[in-house]
Image (cartoon, rainbow, N blue to C red; front, top):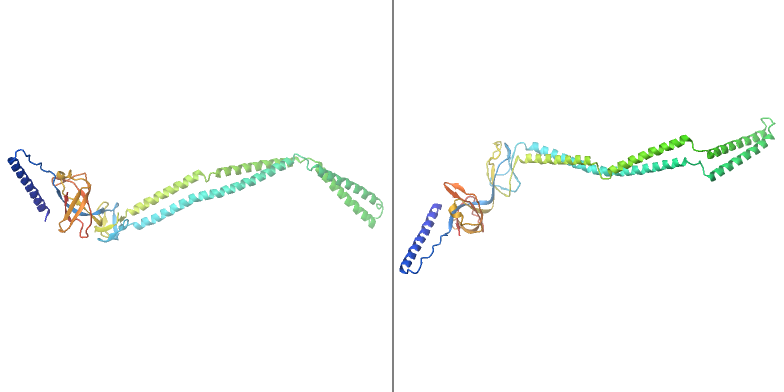
Length: 394
């Protein structure tokens, strides 16, 4: 039974009921004037034509113009969310650019990591340099302080003086012994032996005299000046080492870190931009479903926004009205129960509920109609996309 015939039959049926009720009421009122006629119900079941549609569907288009390079999915073939359906020419160039951008991002991250790693090494080296500089400075200070005193302590001086006295006495004895042989010939053996003893005694006395003079002397002014200079140099080196360590206490240089982080952000932005441009050349499924139609031919140019394909999730069906007018919309609410029949499947009747009411009406041939989405309580394998359905709102 077609739509118009069903509507006409239902209208005639409801009109007949109304006329019959009114006539009976008027007759009862005439027979018994004390009994008022009953109030007629004004709310009747609303009938609307509808269609079967998938629970989700989407018309897909490219966001950039180009030439179709390949189609990967055929009409009627299942697709998974994110699966590529088709590509435009030029994808290889962007793939290479993406690889380059990924390498730059990797390099930028490694550079930042190296900054912190090298900072730890530099800090350790700076601590070692401070320790060495401190030792050198302490030694220089000690050496300079030594210049303020005699060259040896008293005990050492007493020993040196005693050595000198002994050396003088030994020299006197050697001179007296040599005098006994002094007049002999120069080649006389005894004279030569005595002369050797005298010569050694003189050398020993001279060494003892030098040691005593050195021990009794004050530091040389040039030695003092050299010690002062060494103290100044080692102090400056210590302060410089301490300054470098202080700069490394809080990690790498903030300016270097900021520059490395800016490089990373730029690399991330470049990578995202390149990926986005590459993805613009690909048509992907927005959800799991079936490619129900494709308007693409390899080698053809396609403009952005032009319908290229349509994907639907046909695992579940819903009903959508097509001719519900403003005269009936106010009596229908979300959650209301409905009964759905199908032209192509006369023996099928399914229950459902109003799931969504589109608030914006559309002008269709002079009538303002509102679209209502209906969730079916159960599914049927015989349902197909765009089948005609009739909805009775209880």
